[in-house]
Length: 152
Length: 152
DNA sequence: TATTGTTATACTCTATAACTATA
DNA sequence: TATAGTTATAGAGTATAACAATA
Image (cartoon, rainbow over all chains, first blue to last red; front, side, top):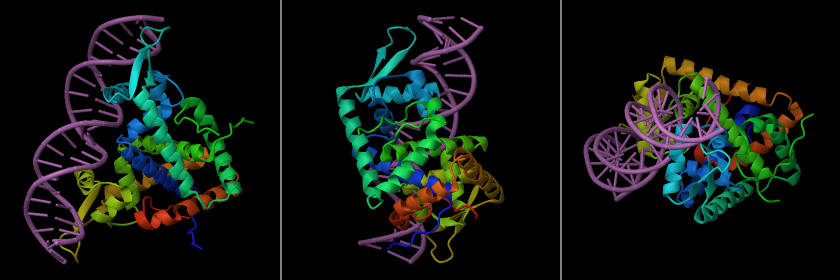
């Protein structure tokens, strides 16, 4: 019986984003990761990705990404592998350790969000997911993957 | 006639959060602000806030906030004012310059999100906003304001 | 020439720990 | 003692510019 204040549509989006970001921060900390490292790891759960594609997905300059990958590699979370078809390029992939942590963090975020939406009826969830899907549709083609899909 | 892929509910939330964050980043840059400064300014549009309350809203340690406010103050965006009732405390408020930029950034984010949701029928927006309102309800009481509400 | 990625540099952001001042 | 906030320090994140290697 909580009285919910009426929210403007855009305000709702912004505040939801803050909440998700907070969840991400909490889960990251639980796994001794920075939020950026967690984001990188969760993205790589779906398989190896090239540096250029990562800059587009994460909206980072290439030099920023070099640093992020350097630190993740130094921690043993990811490795750079040479691209067989282009000797300039490399692909980033999870180590065994990195994959283990990535899956846990990914699940952690999913579970926490599920818990937050606990009382929300499935019907509303579907509307939410499909509406968001529509909003995301065109942008996804530009930015590529930003979060490996959960298993059904 | 875009074919939208089916999204898991939590995946939709995460990807939406990324999109909002991206919008925030773009708008911040347009106004020569860091995303963190923009977030602070957008929060202060509603009036002055104390440091302690800001740490809760922004999920920052107090020392991190000191630095953020220091830099914003150095740029002439905000000022510290002494709290009349507690001589340890201070309140942060926007300068005239800061308020001007804050409102523009706030509007910029709102407009860009509106544009993204352009084709979404009002009915779906309402469902989205109310569903999100439900998710946020309990958390808002803990964290306080994180985004000054748009005017109706 | 264009693209892929790194290096150098300068800020900004953030947390931990120790501190001052006031309640 | 507890709370509000700052300072000191260290590391992470980020962008710009200049660079090397390959396409």
